[in-house]
Length: 230
Length: 201
Image 1 (tube, helix red, strand yellow):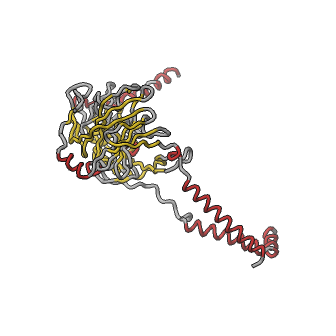
Image 2: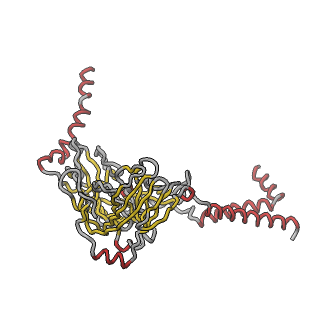
Image 3: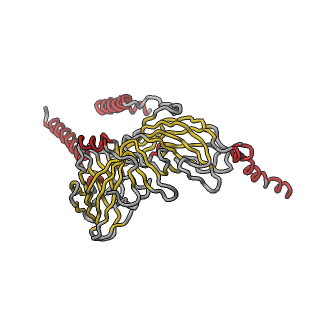
């Protein structure tokens, strides 16, 4: 019935229908031209190996090696026995002014490892005349250490995936009209083997079994109690 | 062409023109950075340059391939660089009230800004590290790390606010180094330039 009404309407207002159809066709055409009908690209990121050069909008990066040790290259050591996870990278700033934000280019995810070993590095160190903080000047390549902390009881991982994050410069942001870096987007994942540089006498934490023991024991405790109550 | 079609054509032209005008305004209206930009106060080496809250006179520029600076504990440490260390001598005076020089940078001819290095080493002569009092001139140094090929034509920027000076004066003092001067200075650049002890003369 509705179809009949529509056909009747088409007979009465052919131009309006033609215009509508033309508009719909135009929208479809523009959508097609802009790639709107294409499949979304698969979300797999490239996995360059350690030592390859990755260029982001802010930096040219060359992740070199990763290791776990007792203290950072500049000599920082936590009193609670936390280990440091170090990522050594050659970084060249591509920005127009000195910046200490190189840490925003790296993101770690270590499933099962507690402590501040997730996300962006806790601090950066300059490996030239080791010192804390890394103010990187435009065009001057420096080797830096990105430092994460691993809880004393956590097992020492043998490999880690380092996600490289790209930021986009906006001349005017939407809030203030001020310039800045926005929209962090992962662009690559670098699988890095982790070298264990912890001295053997303090090795207990390096072997996963004793390290994993305390949480298991704690979780196991309530269960027997519950059984006793029954 | 009927009258109604002429009218429609005129409307369409008007719409396109308005859109173009809007786009042009959007592209050319100054952003927040431009609206709140610093007021440049220009000067050159040897003259006292007056800003709103402080004045600065630069006397001399030294180049060094490495620095020796004290650290809090232990013997002095040597600081190397992949470029060259630029040590600028000068004197700062606050104009009104106690103030800190929180921003100092070298702007190269191609517009890159190399911020002063002041947190890697301790030196009581660093102009960015201590408070300045009104009317009392304080001599000291500013230390920069720059690639030597970018040094010619560099301008020192100084302001009271850190990172981005807004709606305040920013001193822009030309160091007066051209290519030949940089070459000559590079040939005689000192290794192990001492930042501790007496103010280097």
